[in-house]
Length: 85
Image (tube, rainbow, N blue to C red; front, top):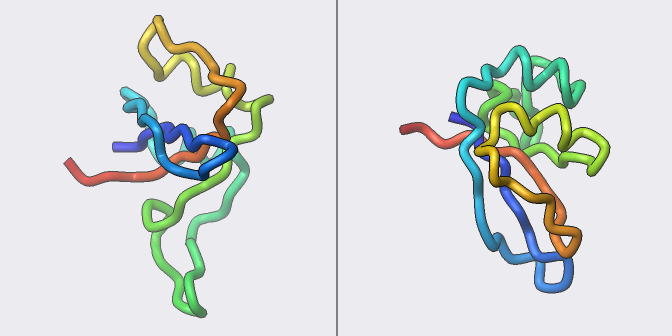
């Protein structure tokens, strides 16, 4: 499952994550425009292996996969990451 991760801008620590319910990899690729593989140290992995930065402008597109009470925290930078359940 994909998660939206919030990192504190000052400390760069992960402060919370939010499950992106019903979001598949193909839809996420369309939203964030990343390709089909993730290269790490010269090795190609599937997209789920990477963490991807989420610009503030893309958060509204991800909002429909988040709980209704989600609020953007301006003190955080956002990324998406994949965790196997």
